[in-house]
Image (cartoon, rainbow, N blue to C red; front, side, top):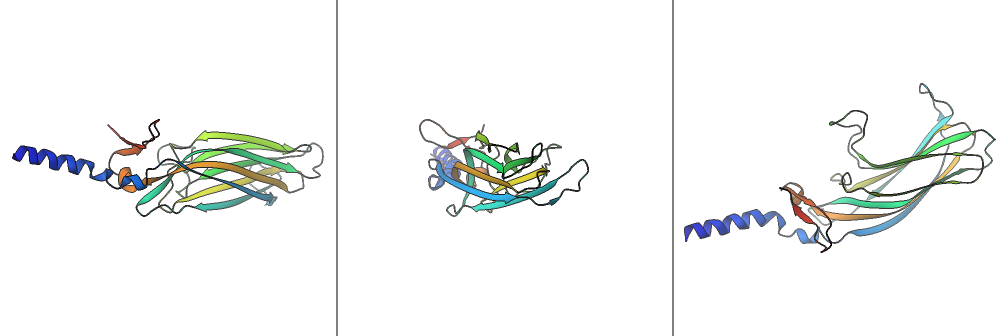
Length: 202
């Protein structure tokens, strides 16, 4: 009898992190956005550069239930850019990044950024607009910080057109509310055909 009671108690304790997790680990949610900006900026004086550089940042703040955090699962969309009236043989680079608010750089490797889950770039010149489509699984690096903020960043660099670069990013993202207790109990979120999103790490 005592052994049975002990076994039941251990089972209850082992399942405690899962209790109440359903409110967070539901099916993925989705949302879409479009941001646009004219990038020009000041002269870039860094070594090995020329032209001008500029950046624009938007911060999307999610509102998960208490005790939950946000994981970005997937994103698809495009980065579109063009320059009006650019002289011939002039160019500008453009980029898009999705980031968390964690510090820049990495404690695990050099020359990478742990806080950046998506990074794409393209270049524009005189002529038709450029479109850089993207579609990516972001779940590995998509867990946002406790502030639940997704940073969307666009930038231009090496812009020697003498003109602003019009840049737009449109995207649809899939995201999920994750129970904080699952993040500290050896449990990770995953997607399965049955719609369950909790998996115990072995």
